[in-house]
Length: 481
Image 1 (cartoon, rainbow, N blue to C red):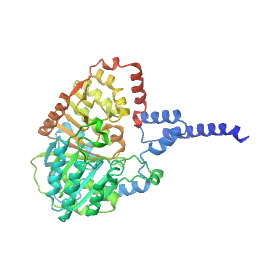
Image 2: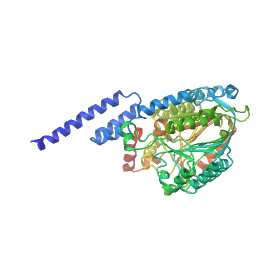
Image 3: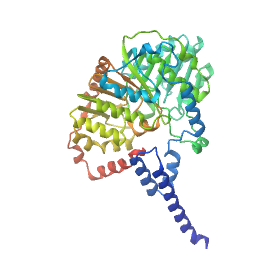
Image 4: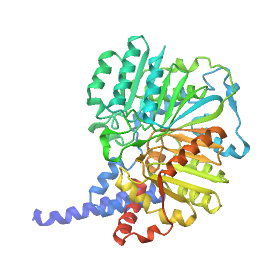
């Protein structure tokens, strides 16, 4: 009798589970309606499996212990320099009035104000980035702090490893924090062993294991790329510690990145972000470093940092981008490897083009994520009809994450224009309120456009029905990619 009743029990259980999960989704306060619909579609379409996937990666769970600890660290070690430095107000300025709303959104996340007196050198070549970072490590006198999503066992990895080991021998405190999943291969490499044996402190950010999967979402990643040397020199942007040939995904190479070498007060806030993340995963408090004096100098560029992640205000980075897009009056240029934004951010982009703003979106022609590329191309028709000029870069995998607005302000960092970066990953972005830097970054963006194919407005109509069906089907689950 049991064998005959088993299918009924199984079906009943599955239906009850679906009703339960749909109820959980409807009551969720942290998901957009499009994300809720996408998850419902997956749960209904894939019996049991859809529910399992949702429980594994469908929430923003950091884990209750880690969430409480993270909140305490942010309270005790603020990102803003104001609680740490006595003369902090001498570095704080107000941007142009038309960008007040942009700076206010950024400030609402980590309390970071617009800081003057910074120097920024734009680096557009991966080998130059690695050599510049290695040279600063070789010249370091006190400490070297590196935080990266990915480090490879390649020539770039060797250069940085050797530089850190040599600096450590000189008595420089060297700390390296790498994302557990992104740098999984590196943690099994000989370079990692060399670093540990030499005394360089190496730690895993957001460790991945089966036990953790029970209590927290395992694919919440630390995607930041930060380096701080002697508390005075900083790096941030899209560069991982890897050669542009990117050995783990050679067929998409070269990977094309953009990063910035920084000096000035902004570096201290970059250090604060590293100190927060290091404390989170090692329990070592480096707060004293943030209290060291900063030289007063209001020449140079004005900049503002924003650290985002699943621990910050939901969709904070998305709100910043929307505000920035609405502030554009003449020209808006965006480069990103992955384009799958939330509805509101895409709407702000469409409205910018419809308002008459010359709007360019530059994406790689060949993407390492087939699903995200399909989701991106499903939006081409809407973008093109609104007046957005879409370009597909042919020179490799365009990995630079940049925005320029009216040649007056710029945004550069580690965040992609997709749901993962906007809502799930730990990211760091920098706003630069300086026309000279914005023009320099825009010039770099135009070199990408020169190596791109501009998508004709009628191209999506020429795609086969099967291709459009595939792209639009993927677009349905884009909110959960």
